[in-house]
Length: 127
Image (cartoon, rainbow, N blue to C red; front, side):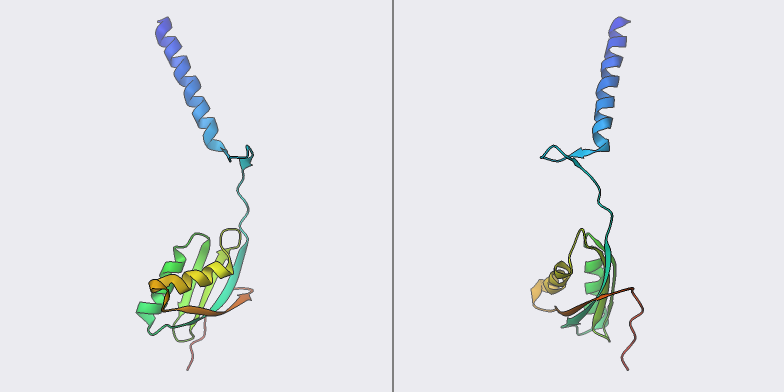
């Protein structure tokens, strides 16, 4: 009986220690890693090289929406513009431009002008 109680006590202590470690992560410097509040920015990017709605605009939109730090991704083929909301703590405007340029092997698309905007609005179609 004492053996069983001893084993249970040891198991409980080991399990408790492992759970405590999960709550906070200690980085190499010995300081606990803390989550930083998101700093969202909205940008509008002029994109050159798109030749179609489905193959180009939707591909760029889809690929960028999967990038860590990008919260919103919308590309309009007619206007040749992409709108993105991203966390500035995780990714930069320049990184987004590089991601666009890197789609399709890097020879298809180019982000030519990046403008910070207050809020995302529907991109008006060019007639």
